[in-house]
View (cartoon, helix red, strand yellow):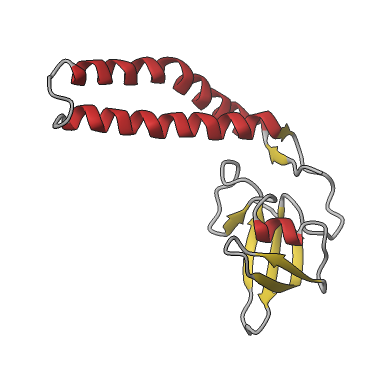
Length: 160
C-alpha cells in the first residue's frame, strides 16, 4: 500500500507553479546560460559553463522531485484523526535505551513551515510509526541495515 502525501490547495498550487516555471522558462534560461558560456571557448577551464551545467543538474533534480510529489499528492484535508500516527500528526517517540524523547511531524516539508523535524510517511521512522498509537513499540530498519526500536509516547494532530 503506498502512502499518500497530503497537501493543502495553496501548497499544491505553489508547487505546481514552481514546476511549471522550471519546466518552461527555467529550462530556456539555463539553456541560454550554457550556450553563452560555451561560446566563451575552452570548456575544460570554463567556470561559467561548469557552474551553469551544475545549476541545470540541480534544476532537473528539483523537477523530478516535484513531478513525483505532485503525481502522488492528495489535495485537501488529511483524514480525521483517530489517535494513530500518520500524515498530519505530531509524534513523540522514545528510542530504546534513551531517556529522552524526540518529537516530529509526519508530513511533507513542502507543505509545512515548522520548527519541528518533518519526516515523510515513506521515511523509515515515519513509515514505522504510521498506523500506531501512543503506548505501541515498533522496530524498523535504518538505512544502514541496522534496526532501531521506538516507543510511541504521544500522537496528536498537527495544528499550524
